[in-house]
Amino acid sequence: MFTITRDTVKPTIIIDQADPTGKVFASPNLIISGRVEPFSKVKVNGVDANVVYDIWSVALNNVNPGQLNLTIEAVDAAGNTSTETKTVDVWMKDVIVLQDNDPNMLLNGSPLSPLPRSPYFSKTVFMVPVETFTAFFKDNAPVPANDLLAVTLAGKTYQLNIAAKNKGEITVDGNTFSLANPFETTNGVTFVDAEAFAKFLGIEYEFNVATKVLTMTRIWK
Image 1 (cartoon, one colour):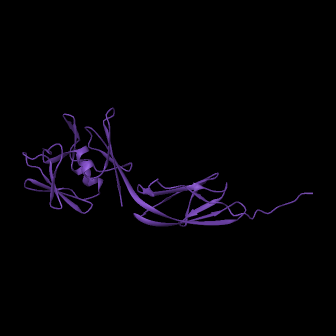
Image 2 (image 1 turned 60 degrees about the vertical axis):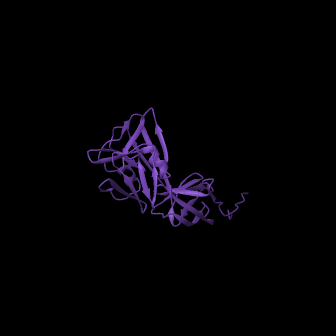
């Protein structure tokens, strides 16, 4: 004699933990993942997740920075359902990649319009067109005005003193700062010390000496 026992146990939903700081990053899509009873179906905020045995993941598009409420629904092979809710702190992560002597750039893996001129080394300093940063921040091109170059990034205007005598002076919010190396202008294109300017803006900077590839990461909200 066979005994048939009906499965009435709700599937357990496990949601992967966020960054140790409590942040989750969208770049530009937000990836949410976790585990569930094998062969279950999962939805996150109504979007079907990809499930491989007991591991699920989903990419949420057009997510804005800030608090995001998640509703995760799971249905196991027997038709039992579970629902979990979670609030996550969404931050945006943009990664730009460029190389010495190459005007092409990638933003989050996708090509951008080429720079007006290629980056280069001035002695040991890696110089990039200031348009590298306006592209990074998805802002408008710099606006020249005599010896100043107005660069607007994330709604804040930085006045770069591009006069030949200057020491890499930047004025923002009425305060003037000096980078370690002066700006350089070639054929109307202003170049900045990539590392110094990135750190001034709070951008992570990583340069691979062997490949001469620069990777900069901006985390923002």
